Length: 600
Picture 1 (cartoon, rainbow, N blue to C red):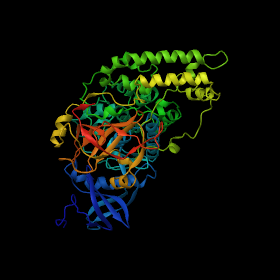
Picture 2 (picture 1 turned 135 degrees about the vertical axis):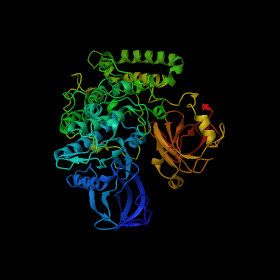
Picture 3 (picture 1 turned 60 degrees about the vertical axis):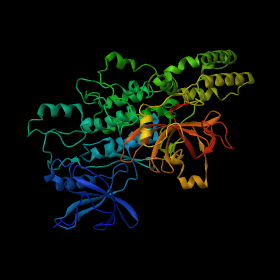
Picture 4 (picture 1 turned 30 degrees about the vertical axis):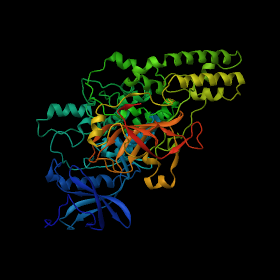
């Protein structure tokens, strides 16, 4: 009856009932998903049919019906909405399909790679996910496959839980043909994994899935978001559901860039002790809501994954973490930007170069303290607590907005933080800044700030230091037919600043320090126009400096590269344009590059 078409490969323009096929989005465990349109609007259509990933092809239709039944019970802004269902091409015996809202955005993994979120932004995002999970569980629905690929972040910054193909509800018939339901093995709870190991040879054994299993899975996603800058591509990550090995905490894994409180929270979600793991999504959300109210630059200003972490990493050998090491994570953490520098092995060889500037900074700080320390005034340490920093440029793609991130309950000025009982540092600093500084104080602060810049402190680095290119970059560029040592591709510095056409009409924009995702404007060698390249900009010095570290090849593969921004005369960096001022650097949107043999 259906021999005249292939449901796995419907072509653009073909019709499924009233929906016109635009393109195929992907394949799931029992279905293929298409982008479709109707009345000039986009939707997703999930067509139930046997695929090469189908683990139980006889249950394909039953799974589609159960997914539809689950979605019919849910109505939450952070859960995918079902808009209709039917059968095609026959109304009685055709393939079952469901029509869903179309989420224009990125998987959670890709969102991390694109936006380099701060701890606070991750907290806001997961607050919404736990709110959706609470709604789901209150209606007796378990997702059972909460993974990085099944959580989308729309371009407006809103997360959406998708793909209920493995979901279950309280009165549903049993469809599982093994001890465990379909799902992502990495995100299975320790108790589910233990059940599997004990019963995998027992055909009649069935694991009783619980709310704590979904909580563990969402906690595993949070752990990967916090510890892995490229979660979409990484291999060799630590096992999370072992009863024997405890993975390193996010605070430890990122060398202090993830705040201790958020690190500890993530570890409670994946604890193998059910007395420690939150019993309900509501409990998990309540704990996270407290963290959303924490102030401080290490929460709100600094991404916890530095740009250098975009480079492919060698898989680390998994080792158990001792109790002593885990307890050490509870120690106070230094400023996030400082910790990031300590954790970068490429900076190790640079330390002798900065001995003299560091001595100068110490001397300047002592001068500042001597001028500022007056009996009737607050200690100078509070005045100098805020060091000059430069936040990476915000991408136009999905980050929670400031309005969304603002807590609904504001803490009083004298409230304490969650950890040490001391007054909130930002509130103390605000009080200290209310008085006017004398000329001597301003001079001392200026001297200290100059010394801080000269010390090469991360976040205010005026230009990157010379160093070798990433391993494999030279070979990769040669394979792309880029002649090393000469001009490389002409690129848009950051695709979030507009297209090539827009850059010709408005060639200038405002730049700030931070990660960028550029694109080739024209083909270069074997690299097509539009190929994405990941890099980092430095804007606080005399010019705009940029390095691009990684290229996304057609087909999904990524390779290291070594491109530097150069102007028309191959001088390193780009000139700042008229209108530039501190914190507001004006420069070109597009630039030539040099396929470098080493960073200059």
